[in-house]
Amino acid sequence: MDLYRAHVLVCGGTGCTSSGSAKLIERFEEQIAANGLDKEVKVVRTGCFGLCEAGPVVIIYPEGTFYSRVKVDDVDEIVTEHLLKGRKVQHLVYVDHKTHESSVQKSLAEIGFYKKQERVALRNCGVIDPENIDEYIAFDGYQALGKALTEMTPEQVIDEILKSGLRGRGGAGFPTGKKWQFARASKAEHKYFVCNADEGDPGAFMDRSLLEGDPHAVLEAMAIGGYAIGADEGWIYVRAEYPIAVKRLEKAIAQAREYGLLGKNIFGTDFSFDIHIRLGAGAFVCGEETALMASIEGKRGEPRPKPPFPAVKGLFESPTNINNVETLGNVAQIILKGADWFRSIGTEKSTGTKVFALGGKINNTGLVEVPMGVPLRTIIEDIGGGIPNGKKFKAVQTGGPSGGCIPASLLDIPVEYDTLTSVGAMMGSGGMIVLDEDNCMVDIARFFLDFTVDESCGKCTPCRIGTRRMLEILERITEGKGEEGDIEKLENLAENIKNSALCGLGQTAPNPVLSTIKFFRDEYEAHIKEKRCPAHHCQALLNYVITDKCRGCTLCARKCPVGAITGTVKEKHVIDTKKCIKCGQCMANCKFGAIIKD
Image 1: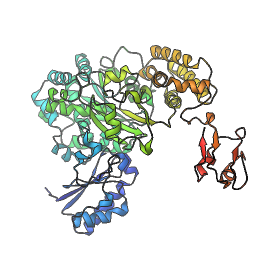
Image 2: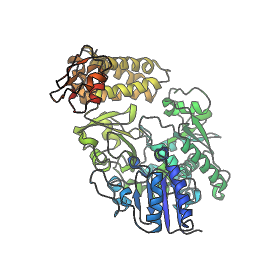
Image 3: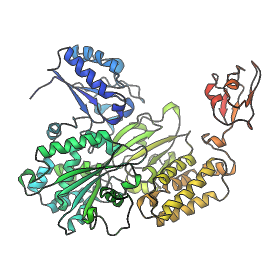
Image 4: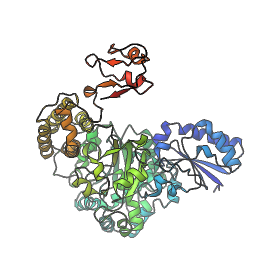
């Protein structure tokens, strides 16, 4: 085995890859070889480190030096200074947004973004080469599968998952052990174990990152689950828009088969299990389990009524268990370390950790994993680094189109299943979009409902027509055409849709509207009664005003496409609001900050 004095870990997740990390790897390998270091230094392409805002990220061990926003032109300096001469390149070292402290003297765990995280599902992401099965095995990979097959009965495996309190991380939070129990109880010659990797929420990338950074963890969990329920075949339903994840899954499956960890008589037992991949075309509704199964079968991705539930009659009409990627990311660790260990993390009813894709108006955008029950404030301020540009935190949207908005007044609530549900939001799959004072909550509700209307399969009337009627009302309100009674119409439509839609997509579609009405009703009323957008966001309700800061440079008048601005040189100009088309060109081009939104 080759021993290296240093390892250069380069993020190979989608975010950093899109920023050029593949070229960084090529340049590192070229320069390391050119300097005669190829026998001493190894370059490793990893999965996502989590701190996407700082990408492309490069970490050099054994020092643990965290370099951020690395460009190809920086590689030569890192190689000659750090790897050859042992001097860290100070100007490339990551600096914390909140404290402005350099990470040069700190370990990764001491950096503000990581300090309050606890990684279970993401334990190997950014640590190992996801395309090398040997590295996964070196980090206890496939030991849990070996333990389950050689030391435990299927019932004992299920009992351990039940005792752990693991709940589904894909949305509803149903106990994973119970799902497995139901599928185990179904009598059939053939059963299936399915991984739902159809991650469709806007702003969500938890499952993608786990598949890219640690694909073997999902394969191992599926094999353990297959053994537990009595299945001999598994399917991973993953969207085709995740090419890196698909490539690494394909490679991981081939490697596992080669090592005898998938296929016939695994670990010398009579248990056989293999896994196939099915690519989805990006339909949000196919995240719903019955629609997903229909798509795997080659049918139109539409949900069907339940019962029968998949555990009784699922894929190809056989008993089927379906779990999402993050749920499976916890399974091997539970089997290996025990249910009590997992229960020691989180809260009594929400055990373990939860992964969130933190995005929107936040300094540290990226992937975070925290123990259940941490205050929302910890995620936003300590891990996320607060709101950029000195703006005020307004709300956070959790759970995507199925979730709700949590206002600043509830910033100290614990993040757990039941608490989020009680305030009109939900855990969902883990999207967490932060909003600041410049966001209009009516428009946020319109945005998510527009997404849902577009993604509805159209099978049931409440979702197909009801959500569209709600969207039409929201569009009228944001265009300044709202009417008295519109809020009540939205509430009535929402309740009817929630109570009568066929599947979870329709039943939860009104949540963003209901939560914004609940916490930001005054904004709805301002739009309707005063024809005013308090956040100065909705274009139809804006007026641009030239203040006394105007120097009379005439630039705004020259840039106005409709001639709505008049005035002479060195005198204050005026905007004719009747002519103004509210394009914002005057404000964007004013060099003196003299034009404001009213």
